[in-house]
Length: 411
Image (tube, rainbow, N blue to C red; front, side, top):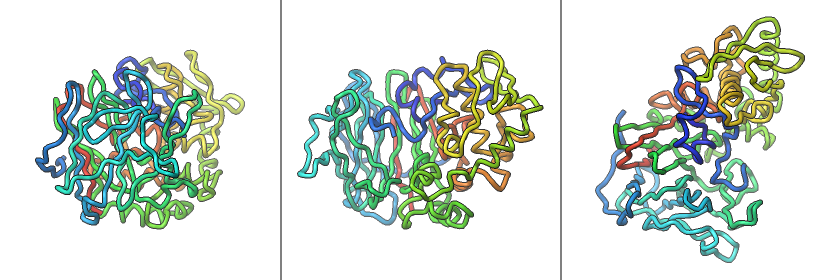
């Protein structure tokens, strides 16, 4: 399946990508914390729904229901924003309550330059939307509204400055908010809940179509348990921010809340292990054999060598682990990045490792991702950019979708 950034822009191209044999399609896109919808850069039982009538859907739109089951916030305290990329024009858009897309430049703004695009939540407990063909995010904000300024991107076009809840100076830092990501196009609906950046509002998503699929749901009391477990984990405690959110360690590193060398000992162990031993990485393009030569992990078959990554490179699956969407070097880099986050490379020369019981078994590992997976109903979570390697991400897709539900679950 596709990484967070790539599926938002080209989900329909999944089958054309070089993939991990036995693990399902895998992209080679690097930048987990961002999506193409973000101009700044920076994968059971369904939820309860209501029968509230929604807007009249135009041809090709997908009915969406956003359900308030928080148990803490009245529907009048919740607002939505649907933003992203119009797949016809390539421009950034927002949706109004009727599901009509509008260019960012048309967004009304307040005196501070913040876009007034919030969709009020229905007082019935569920809000109905009609989702056109677009790629982007459905944001929810509780007891407040999100502040997104209209800015100019690098191409001179109007764009939104998306919320960055992990940045202390961001105007949404104190706002309880979260999002789900999606691409809806002629090929179907491709969507995920994400904790790559942070966890704030627990949500589950259900996609109806050729089958009924739900993912993202935390176990009962999961949010509190995650906050407590991260706070208790040595080196990770500062990632818990005022009970409002837990931020990912990569963002914690950038904010001075997490050690920039935390994963270096495990990286060194991997590099030492494969100086004299072959590392075999299998994708749908074949099996590629690598060894550390100098300070780089070099593979045969034309795969680009991987320089020794820093802790930041591993957490963001970027830098030395940049994974181009080329069907060759990208999937190999993604598998190595996943193995480093899961501490599943040493002693396991045949990659990828598919059994989640073999993940996170060392003292130095991505405990943030480990804790998230331990507290989801289906064991799936998007804890880092390539958590989709071997389909361990909270991602679902359907080529014949009929309905999509986002549930704000109890916490």
